[in-house]
Image (cartoon, rainbow, N blue to C red; front, side, top):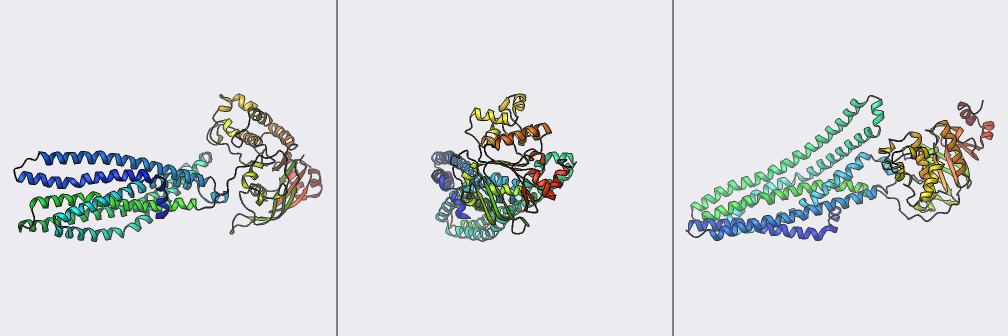
Length: 568
């Protein structure tokens, strides 16, 4: 963890060195103050002019303040750079994770790692480590100056500081564990809140506001309790530091007073020694604070590394794909979402020739959407063979494979932003002519004309300003702009009225003359004209044929068609 922590410093080490040197210069100026104060006292006792010592003391104060301010600015600037780098690195990894890993994690907790955990790095890598180095220098310098004044008093001071410092060191591992628990509790609170916000309308419609408030409040209370544990151990470490200095002061005052009374120590030297003793408060306190921040930083790094250590998908620049449609073949494919989960596919076999319209139908839970997840390689099948364009899907470079596919999800997500940004999301290089053609084909002309700023109108968070049917058509237009060789439509007409469904059926039929279209449909009216229909049930393929063939030979399909009034 220490090695991983220091890796964040490496790109900024030059500025950190400069900031550290400025801090050291400020520390040197501070170390001179008690010595100059001794000269002032000596000058006062010997009736000499105090102008020189006072001027020197004033210069030391001014130089120390200015140089320290410059060093602190560099440290804070570097800290912001470290946080920026850590966030970029973490977000880069998150967006390249496999879908299976993201499905397992909680969005609120991921957000907490990007925001809260990375912020902790700033404190530990600037104030925590670099300032601790400066504090260590100040501590050593003060001890050297104290040694030149009286070795006996120095031994008394060190004995007290070492004993209490050892006790403080035993607290540090507890602080790290408590801090990690606190950060995990904050992440859990974010996950619970994210759950409520994602289903905000459902919460309102269900009258569940009070219940969800209670759930989030419970998570917030757990985060508070974990935070109190951190505060308790941190306070104990701070109290130990304060006690070390106070006890050392009492001991030095007693022993030093006796040495002054015996004539073995000057009063001015005792005063200077006591000033250096109080001067130890700042560096010792910073060292303890640095140790506490180091424990917090280690806890943050551990949570960040948990994400960075997850395998990322290889990213490749997709080659320019041809317009030729590709076929699909599943042969004895078996798949489950986890070792402890039941099989979703067992022995799935079917073939989709290049071009034309093929439909997947069947009851819920038959494994239809999983077919699309495997084709996009969101998940890897465990057994069997899947080929796209006659090529094993695992032999395709991932970027090239996904460039050849257009995918419309079941809930047709629309992102916050303008309508134009959503349409061009998967095809940034599409021309205005391509854009207009996709809008026309998906019957979005009326929507564009109705919006106050046309294509440049913001559609709201998750497309909340659009109807369900409009979001579906936007998602389909977005997929068409990609000019896919294989178009995957998951329940593409589920939120359309009868008129728009008929129009979209015409669009799908037109697209099927140019590319391969694979449709998942519960509304069989969408696919009665399909070239072939694959009937799935219980994770396997039950039958394959046209609508008329299946009505005549497959009981399940005939039942599905009858319930939708497509047959008597």
